[in-house]
Image (cartoon, rainbow over all chains, first blue to last red; front, side, top):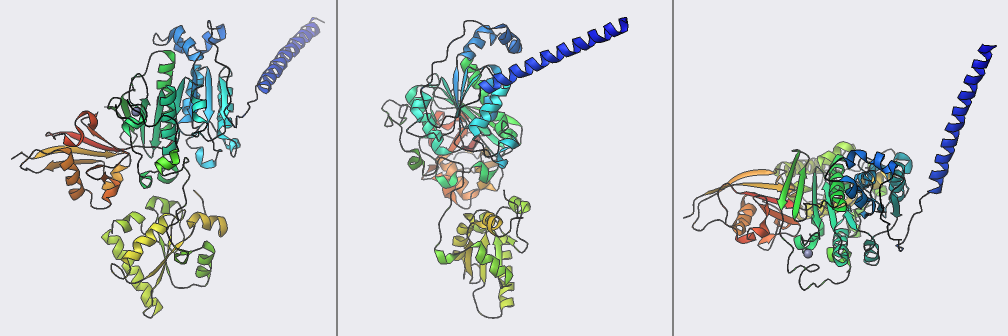
Length: 459
Length: 101
Ligand SMILES: [Zn+2]
C-alpha cells in the first residue's frame, strides 16, 4: 500500500516536471516566432534608441563578467545599450564584429550586405552555416545574432550601399564599422561618415595580413586624408583573387569590435591617428603613428570640394563589389570558346595548352595536358620559363612538320589573365620565341567546369 | 661626400609580390656627394630591386596611390615625405593598402 502511494507520488512529480518543461519550450518557441526578423530592402527611418535607466537582474547576470571591469562598469554597460552601430558588410570582418558587439550588449545593430551566402564564404564568415546558402547574408547574420542575444535590436539590410541611401542610413547610427570588401565602398562610407559626423572603425584583410584605423574620430584624419587618390584598379586584389586565411579577418573583426566597444562605452579608442597592421605569418602587430587631419583634404579639410556624396565607382574606376570583373582585351578572332577547345581536344589537333595561373591554383585543379607558366613569369620574362615555352613550341613545330605557326591556347581561371597573357605572347612571337598563333580560351577553367566537364572542381 | 647608409626596407600588404615575395631587404646605399633622401631611394629601388613593372610601385617621382610609406614606424607625411634624409639604420616600410573583408 505505502509502496503504491510512494510510486504514484513519484509519478506525479515526474509528470509535473514534464509539464513545466513543455510550458518553457512553448514559451520559448512563441517568443522566437514573435521576433521573426524582417529584411529591409530599403532605408527607412528608425525610432530612436531608448536609454535604459538601470540594468535588470538578467542584464547583471548576463554581463557580470564585464561589469566587474572598472574600465566598463555599470555606466559603460548602460552606454553600450543605448548605442547603435552600422556594420557595412556581413562577411569575414562583419561576422565576428557583430557577434562580439551583440554578446557585449550593444543596443542596436544595423547589418548591411547586398550579397547572399555562398559555400566559399563559410571558412571565414562564421555567422553563416551550410543551411544558410543562398540566403541574404544580412538576414543570416541577424538570425545568428538573435540566437546569441535576443535583447539586441537587429536590423538586416539587404541592399547595396550607394550615394543615394548612405547618408540617410548612416545618420541614424552612432558608430559605423567598415567591413566592406572594395575600394568604392570604402570611399563612400568615409565621405558619408565625415558628412554626418560619425566615427568610422575601419578594418581590412587579405591573404595573411590585416589593417585597422579609426577615422574621423576626435579631430583625427579621415580615409581621404590618408588616401586622397584611389589606387589604380589593376593594383587592387580582392579576397576571391588573392585568397585569405579565415582567421585573419576573424582577428581583425574582433579588433574592430574592441574599438567599437571602447568608443560606445565611453572609454574612447586610441586608434584615431594610428594604423594597426597585423602580419599573421610573423604573428606580429605593429602600430604606426599616422598624419593628422589634413587641411587640404577634399572632404574633411578646410575648403572641402566633396560636400555631398559623389559617384564612387567612377571616382575609383572599379565596381563596388568584390566580384571579379570580366575583361575584354582581345578581338573576337583572338579568342575561342570552351566548346571550341573541346573539339580541338577531341580531334587531337596538335597544339600547346598554356595554363597561366599561379602554381598554387594549378595544384587545386588543372587540365591534364597543360603546360604551366604563370602570367607574372611571362610579364617578367623569367628566363627559365621563356626557355621552357620555347622548347615546347619547338617540339610542337617538329610534330607539325612544316613552317606553320603552331597554335597556343592560353587558359586561366576566369579568362582575364589568359587575355593579358595573349597580349604578352603576341609581343614575344617571332622574337623571343618562334612565331606562334596564340588565342585565349574565353571564360577559362570555370567555364570549362560549367559547360564541358561538370566533374571539374570550381573555386 | 656622404657616407654609405645601411637601411632596412620592408614591403607588405602585397607590395612584397613586386619583389619576388621577399618582405625584408637589408640594403646599403652607396656613398654619394649629397645625403640620401627618400626621393633618391625610390629611384635606387627601381634600379636595384624592382626590375619590371615599375608602374605598380611608383608614379612620377613618388609612390603610386594606395601605397603608404612609413619611416621608423611613423607615416612619412610626419617625416618630410620625399625630402626626408635617410639616416643609417633607418627602417622604411612600403605597405599596400588592403581592401578585402
Ligand atoms: Zn580627410
